[in-house]
Figure 1 (cartoon, one colour):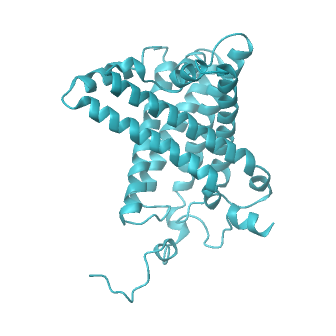
Figure 2 (cartoon, rainbow, N blue to C red):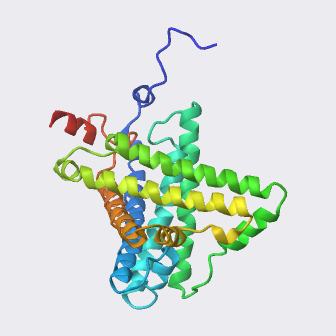
Length: 290
């Protein structure tokens, strides 16, 4: 039984005795990862807006990457692959060494498990970039994988749970935007102060996109049809079919440009509690004084 007189397991207490220099090696990995993540969203949103402007449709991640095959696009794909692998590595080391001091209680373990999950997703995006770089414009295999899962015993339930968790992840980003909790993880300076509203819109848009993808997974579970689900491209198609669909798609793409900005800002100004000076002021601190 815990001693009632002992201090609570707070983040500040977890950082006691930690020397920032011990984890300085993780910061370049974090910066590279967030920069690569921003490049992906910049590519998808930019290509989609360009396509819509020229009478086409918004495109998903794989389609956007396939456009970059050959020439200067190969260099961009290589940078994306590097960034995605770095982001996957960052999520892994962040979770294993608890660099953001979430702790080992239930809430902390859930947060750290989520890091591993997002790391695996971005590892997949890195492999997708490598496939595009090598000229293998193949289907991602997602429908086939879903088909196998749906055909398994309790497969629809498993896919339904995955869809519900994805919707919950989207809701988390929307909550994060509403509460502006991302401000606790960014250094407070003139750049982040003036970009706060764009960052908020970007995080919210990312939440909307993830929630739609989750709803599509739920639809696949409900109808036992893998073709009901998909990534950003399928989410754009679903949104396009709603009332004022093209306007909604354009707004979402603009929002995802904001999320690309959010990633780039994180690459430059994210606070890593175990690798930064304890006196570093966050964006929330700066806004509270302004």
